[in-house]
Length: 181
Image (tube, rainbow, N blue to C red; front, side):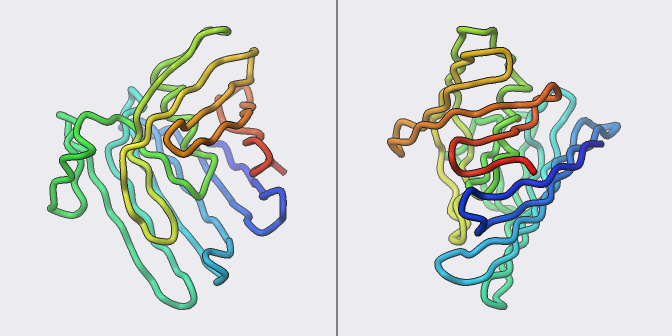
C-alpha cells in the first residue's frame, strides 16, 4: 500500500490518498479537504479496479456546508455504467473514472494502457465534477514526454498541463494545481 499527501498550489485543497493492491485488483481511496463554491467541503472516495485497472466501483461521499451527498457507480463486465440501478448509457464502453477534485485518477488509464516515451494515449473517462457530482464522458490525451513526465490535455475543456509520476505511476505533480508533499 502507498499513502500520499497532496496539496494544491494555493493551499486551498489537501488530500490524503492510499493505493492498495487487493485480491480482486486495486483500490484507490482518498479524503480531500477543499473549498467548493466558497464553502468548506470534505470529499471521501473509494474506487475499486480489477486486475487490469478497469474501474468496477466508485463510491463518493461529499460533505459541503454540512450537506451530505453520495454517489455510487458500478461498472459491469460489459463496461455498462450504473448510478445505483440506473443505467448511464452515455458512459457505456468507458474503462476509467476521472474525479475532477483529485490527481489520483490520472494513474488509471496509464496503468491500463502503458505509453512509451514519445507515444500518446487518447482515452475517454467518466468525469465526475464537484460539487455537482455530474458525470459526463471526457476525452483526454496523455503524451509521454519523458521517463515520468506527460503532457496532458482535455480538449473539450481547453485545458493542458504537465504531469509527473513516481516509479509506481502515482502523480507527483499536476500542472500548477497539485503537488505531492
